[in-house]
Image (cartoon, rainbow, N blue to C red; front, side):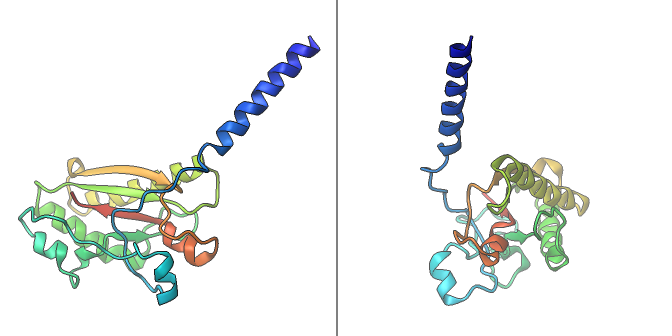
Length: 181
């Protein structure tokens, strides 16, 4: 009986060790689009992907507004406070602009990607990213977009934009990205 119990514990321990280390070899894929907000030149070298990108192709119906860097639609990243799903006041106008655009262009769809910083368990961060994406989706729908236009996905902590382990990096990783096809 003791030998069976020790074999079971050994097997369980090995499985936990393998599972715990399974994500260490993976390199996160770069995010599709992000916004450069208050990043110094040195920090840009670490997170050079932290720039807004426009649409790759013209889909008509206002694609120029999506590509205009002066338009609020050019901002495709909504940042969140620590452990929060509340849309910050400084991003309310951005979310409103995207909702208005989507309402006026019913043929356009969007994916909202939810992200989290590395603090917390992977499971918790995946759920937090989902809640962030759903918060953006809910607000877009309340402001006039159709629910059918909006897809949500969570990457949790798996696609950090900043690889540091300080508040600057964490604040850049607590985000939702608005991805137009």
